Image (cartoon, rainbow, N blue to C red; front, side):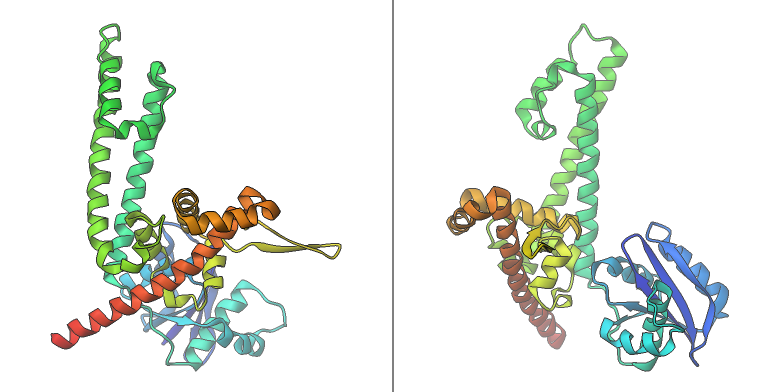
Length: 352
């Protein structure tokens, strides 16, 4: 039996293998967090494990490790989550010095997993995974569509005042088609521009199809979340896909830190202030930014909050306060939706 402890990070993951009696097997591995992550980890562990069963113990690092855990589980591996608090004692016990490093943390995760057999096993909720695939696919389609439209604008100089979103409207598509059909254009130029317009139309159709599917899937999963002003079906799908199990975040403050919505305290000459947090999950941060902008326009309570804080914090500072408040609202809504969702699954299993 081999236990692999992993210390996850944004750009790289560090893995250390430990056998059943606590001896390290092979050398620690530092692998890039990219498309070849799972292949690299499996190739490495097969070369040193000798075919014995392997358990992957991952430090509970929330978003940084979730995709790693999903990939390992889909590859047929057993994955357990190791709370950080369990690693502290093993880090002090097994480290040669008191220094802290990524290999030491990875080894501590493995030792903690061996000493605590009842740790939570990672699982994949198929509904969440389905949403995650659709959301990622839709995002890729939108990026591709924007790229083609920008190329079209670069070639069709008479259309420079328009934005990529204008080609979502039938009237604008008709006017651009008329420009492309101009007889003064050379045949190959006209054909290329026509092909680009055709591709944009096809991408529009595929994005709309994904929107319809996402809406059908999100409606039963997030009824409370969808009641929040500024949270569309696509935004709710992103929240569910990126966060998954909301109970991973024991408080809204931890969720705010993960999404980059929690201001960072800065101290200088006994002057306490806070600055913008530019880290965190930028995809989720974008969802909260969009919701704050929508609420600024349409929600009276949000308008009052912004008016109260704007004189002291400025327009941007007030908006960031609203984003932080929205994290609290979303955290409560996702807890309520997940409880309802869990009860429905339990009833279906009992009925079966």
